[in-house]
Image 1 (cartoon, rainbow, N blue to C red):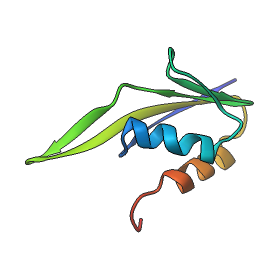
Image 2 (image 1 turned 120 degrees about the vertical axis):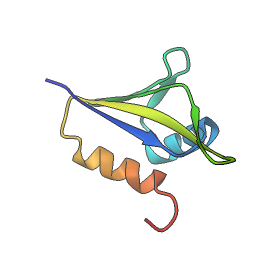
Image 3 (image 1 turned 90 degrees about the vertical axis):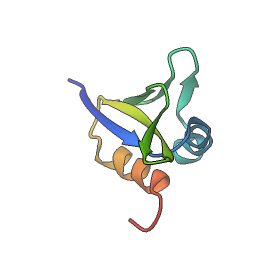
Image 4 (image 1 turned 60 degrees about the vertical axis):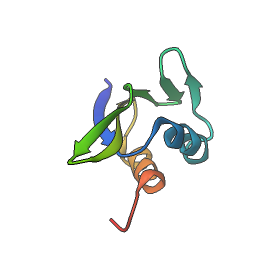
Length: 87
């Protein structure tokens, strides 16, 4: 049984593709499907968008994880590498 979790990241696609190999060296990327895969999980990227607040445009991208194993360790690592600011 697989579990799915979706999140919106506040980063550009270039930042995301730069950080993923550092965070998850074993994951492979297929640019056609926009999917990272590793043993026990996969992550699919939605096309990048922007959130507009007044005249400010903030990049964002939805990522959808699919887990065949316990997601706790994978999500903990993901959030550690993709955390921004002091939060």
